[in-house]
Length: 368
Ligand SMILES: *Cc1c(COP(=O)(O)O)cnc(C)c1O
Image 1 (tube, helix red, strand yellow):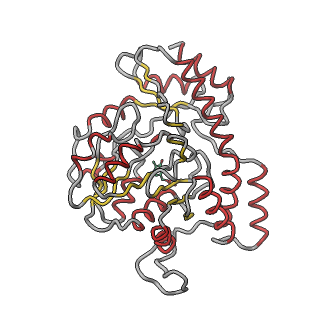
Image 2 (cartoon, rainbow, N blue to C red):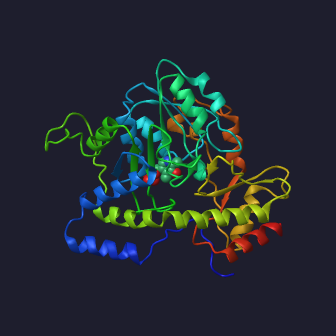
Image 3 (cartoon, rainbow, N blue to C red):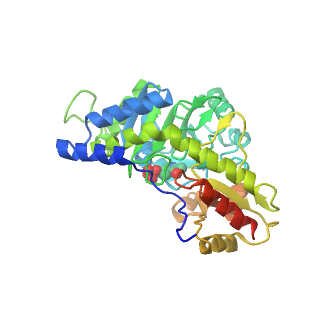
């Protein structure tokens, strides 16, 4: 097999290309009718009243935090085991990330450790649904309710996922999505916020356009940013959203084949789906433990030499990066996140990986 199997690849068809050309010819490139249409479609898909489109997943998180009233010195309980954007968005609001260790089976924050982190300063809980597996909805939503807190889900990696047949986007008080090029659906760069709370949706809209007052122009109520999505990106996003169920189905088929093919290998731990959850496998992330025949680094090198891309998402938990560590964190604070960062490796699962290629990946791993 000569062609390298990539870890992710945007899935663009003629529909996206034709729509983009149409927008380019129309003369209206910036936020306009297509952004509105995308917002309507994603809200309908998620089952929420409102959606606000923005130009990245990071912008979506920042808008959501602002919209939920997170401000200077507020505390946000979140995961150290995620992409840096989750915590950076908290820092952008001058709030403090209060990390909570993760559960080694779900890669998401461990609900049993949340309550001990709640203080008078706690404003919201921000779970991340890693690799396409939704956070522990029942437990975390109940903790939030009992403590009069709200939940913001970082669903950058989990669009289309479900908990008890309900779609991500409508599980938390507010949800943020990313449409970055590697994500399950993409507009190159892009993002969105979904919620049933009208006031939060309106705040997000204001924040994405310099803090402009509702129903005015050139009247500003507070600091805001330029987080607007273009109609070019919205055109792509609308077409991508039409394909999401099919794309998710192929991801799930690939994940199932990987599970069947790689099960019962000593020292290699596979993701397991809980029956209440429908995972969307943004990544198929396995764990190479000490019992496995070789080290993770050798495993990755070997797969690469066989034309299979394997990557580590992410090699260092967030509390160990200098700008976050200086808030008062140190090595050893979150032992599960730290151990898993050394064990994880993601192997190709995206919809452009064929069944034949999946079988090739399984065969090569079994040869180790
Ligand atoms: C991709 C991602 C983001 C950021 O999204 P961008 O669109 O790249 O700004 C935030 N959180 C998580 C968990 C992500 O995977």
